[in-house]
Image 1 (cartoon, rainbow, N blue to C red):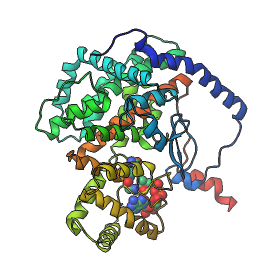
Image 2: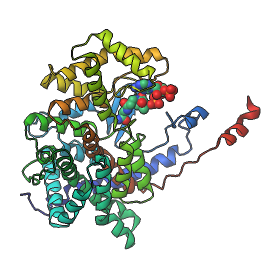
Image 3: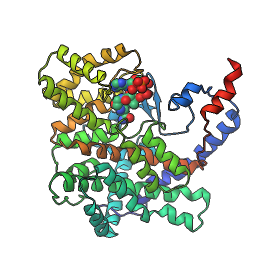
Amino acid sequence: MFKKSGILNCQLKNKMRELIPKYQQDLKDVKTKYGDKVIGEVKVSQVLGGMRGIQGLFYETSKLDANKGILLRNQNLFDLTKSLRYKGSEEPIVESLLWFLFTGEIPTEKQTEFVINDLHKRNYEMHVGDVDKFEKFLQTLPCDMHPMTQLSLSVLYLQKFSKFAKAYRSGVNKSQYWETYYEDCMNLIAVLPRIAAIIYNKCFHEGRKTEKYDYSRHYAENLAHMMGYNSDEIINYLSHYLVLHSDHEGGNVSAHTSFLVSSALSDPFYSYSAGLNGLAGPLHGLANQEVLRWLLDCQKAIGADASDEALIKYTKDMLAQGKVIPGYGHAVLREVDPRYVIQVQFGDRYMPNDKLFKLVKQCYKVIPNILKETGKVQNPWPNVDCSSGVILYHYGIKEFDFYTVIFGVSRALGVLPTLTWARAYGLPIERPGSVTLDWIKNKFADKI
Ligand code: AMX
């Protein structure tokens, strides 16, 4: 069982308390000093093109650089996969990542241990709370409902436990919003693996009973264990996956949706459920299941050891049918996604001879050139979703309708600390302006 020391129980929150005044002052200073500076102009094509490239959001925990890839709190993913390891683990672990994203500091072993213990405590409290009713509710959701719909509904169900909503109703001071926000975020993070595992067992393993949460295991271990997997390799991969998919700047659909909803002071459950609905889109998080479907169809059509020529023809035929090639392209990055690279390194270590994994690498050899030839694709390189499904598939997690649920567990780890910080900074409700086609025509008609 977990330890119950009072001091231990608020270590991360105390660290936040220590950091918040300094960061609040920093924001104030930046506003005073640079408030009137112009970041960039906005073109009509950007307004009509999904706001691509407009730097209009403030999001602290990560930043995408078109060429350097993704930085989490200014550190690159390659370094973090090493510095967030725990007690000789082969992969970074979720609990270290959480400390890092909440505070910007690489945790000591003790600090990671605190997070491990804290998440256990939250699971325990959930368990003695209303768990039976909640799990019964989960069991009533039909399996022809997409697993992402079930995940999102489960998060909404938990909204009734929101400490923030309760504190807000009782008139808590604005300066303390973050405190209950933090509690809700950590509670939600703590229970997500169990929700995911119940959905998995219920819908993909004939309703088998989900193993009990195990207080001797860390986050990814528990996710694997409750889903019915216990090999070290799967645990390593889930650890790795959860860290890699966690945060990706503020503009992606799931992060931005959560951030936007949260800016109305909706609690973390409402906010994250909304984000999950965006993650469920095929151009966003659902792409990982689309990639696997694509690879399996491709393998079926051209054979397991097909030539490059056969693969090129298959890909061109798909494009000619007006389909996108899932797992390729990106709205911001203009280089190979580092998360693709890191996952392929993982695959090279553990499954170099897997035929589907080989196909992923063969695709990398031929698809970018085909996409370049179209003359319109801004980024012909593979993205994060290109390689994740194939690794899960290799380990026997073959139910690809479930893949985005694991992505959803992971994205919470990046988005929810950011929402807590948004409340600590006292950020206002988001309300950008919008324009109509007539407005654009009238504004520029006599200027051309
Ligand atoms: N296959 C075929 N065509 C593609 C393509 C791909 N992989 N990527 C982009 N294009 C096309 C677009 O559809 C668009 O065509 P259009 O002008 O006829 O509408 C054109 O190229 C220009 O698009 P873009 O500016 O390069 O990309 P974008 O910013 O509009 O969209 C993305 C980015 C990711 C949605 C797009 O590349 C795509 O659809 N990729 C496949 C789906 C995918 O892998 N999504 C996962 C992204 C990562 C994530 O969020 N999880």
